[in-house]
Image (tube, rainbow, N blue to C red):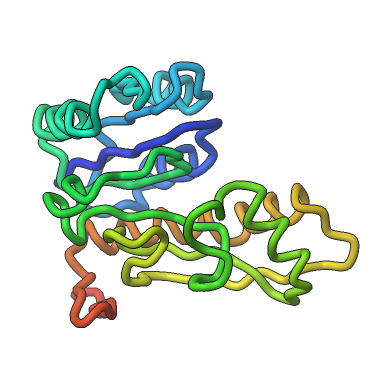
Length: 211
């Protein structure tokens, strides 16, 4: 059974999707062992408490240097024997040192079909504002491994979502969450915990399930 840490900053809707999937036994060979928030007032902390999941708050601004923040984060991962890290709306950039220590063991969910509308500055409603401004007819969500390039890691799963006439950034954000993010993230986590993902030359291969 692999131990999963979920890193959050806000309301925790993607965390809730993982909690629900775990309760429904849809995450095989894995369990959420820790929730780490970059915001002491994040609604995700309430969700973790209700689910009986240990949580911790690490505010980047409270540390004098990046290395001190990294050390605190890595200490938490060691303490809880974390095997997989999931970024679920985590608004603090994960340093290269942490990425290197957990190479191909950090997942992120992004609210677009990468590589479109990804990278620095593309988060939250900004992604959907950009998609609508560009006039795309479909958008979606992507779950990918995290590397040193913002939103540039190997892609694991993607799902398209239709853009409808009259959409606002808010309505589009909600549809992408409901139709894509909340479905893809638990699936990708389970695939990892089942040891069905491999990465070669930046490409992810998904092995068939053992029967």
